[in-house]
Length: 336
Image (cartoon, rainbow, N blue to C red; front, side, top):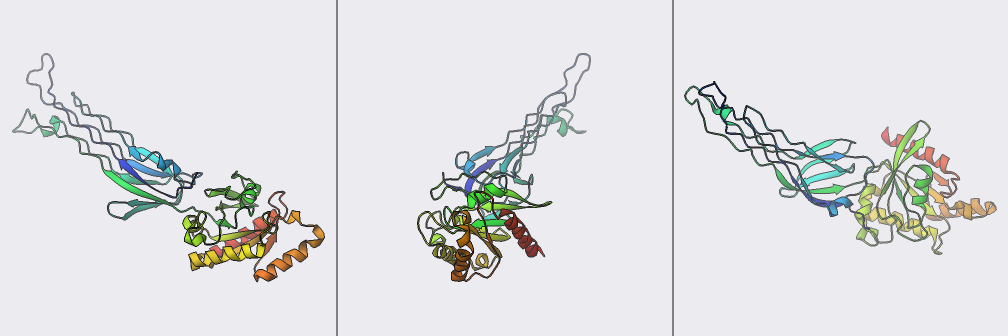
């Protein structure tokens, strides 16, 4: 399954109900006047922000969203029932574009935020509305107006405080499983993560949101592997965590892997490259304890990294608590 971060859909608001043509016809009441009621308004179409959604894949299969029409008016001055508005749930971070004009309609950034994307039609008027001193028995009504129809584009940028990056199988999914409630797929082959996963991480009485982004390969900024369609999601994060597999199962060099990721970030966007970040050296449990300090120092020296680093095991939780508070402190520094 490919992660879908853009889609186009058609939204169609409901038509307003027609006004009614009717006259009072009651026993013992001669010359009854007009009593045709108005129709009901057509339903609007709203997009609604929903936490927990992180993909637009649903919109690959369901591309038409149509609100119901308003009911027509009735006699005895009874108005037709207005249609219920249609709410379509989308992930937070969804930008909405009118494809006919390229106008940005808005962006969904808050849970349960509503954005009107198609206005329902106005109700028709019944003949009672047209009664006047010179026209006591109007036979005139008006139909309801058509609802707005739009083809809109949806573009998703995952919103998170911390974005994870690293090579495939660096242990990012295992880490987010270890320190949050997220349950991404974990396996011993590349590209287990095919779309971003969001997890809420608790740091004492505080919390932050972490995004597990699919692993990157060399030339990812040019579309290799899962490509730059995922790199742009990192641009919304306040900080980055570079997860390094210190003992890759494929025999690759962790130093080369680290430098490759850093290079792809810089090629894609210099502002992304300059984001504050920490390094988590993962799978430290696979190295003999007596050798760990030497291996870590050697790695940091070769990659010329001088910031804060943490040694962890995403599998058993070793060092993860310190990492959590280190990340929270980094986010707070960014907010100041």
